[in-house]
Length: 288
Image (tube, rainbow, N blue to C red):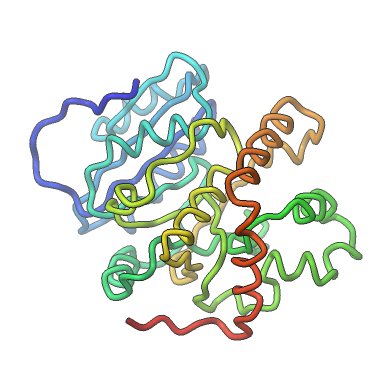
């Protein structure tokens, strides 16, 4: 389904939340319930795309969350295509892409909207995220080069984790509580003005799974806007890490194919963009 849903012509909401999921009903329930806190007092909508779940996700949403805008796919459309389905049906001034396995913890969405209004040269925000264990996720990074892919796969090694290449890519030497410019913020949590889609387009649907978020960030930067790690809003990410669980799976191969597309589009720009980030020894101060 590529066309926008027909809905009543009601006032534009302030924030649209875009969620896709497949067979993670309890994650979905936890996310939607947790979003009631930061969205309280803000006009909003939740646009949910289900990728052919068989675990009762759709039935649960229809029964318990009838105010959600629900799009039901008959097959698994992957990440980019399904997210684009959600994005094309988002009417809010601001859009928040969030993974179904996330859970709100703290922070004020109004602070994020004010920040984007006050900093017109910033295109995209990524929020602070933790694993359920309490360990911080490296959700703000430089853009991934081929060597970063190798190092990310070998991150269990102490030698890899302490290497300059790994630390620079993961931006380990920055205070995780500090706002800073990044090359990439995780597609599990991306906040931006809806008008950004008019400027750089939607997600690349040739990228079925993986690196569509890196591509989106790279396109933001190449449009002369900034990608910013915004730590003031916090989520837990109950990360499923599908390819890490089975590094030789079909999904891993699909992810590699997506990276090849990413590299073909951005290889000549990666070194320049990442070098610019490395040269910023202190978290930048953003002023107009």
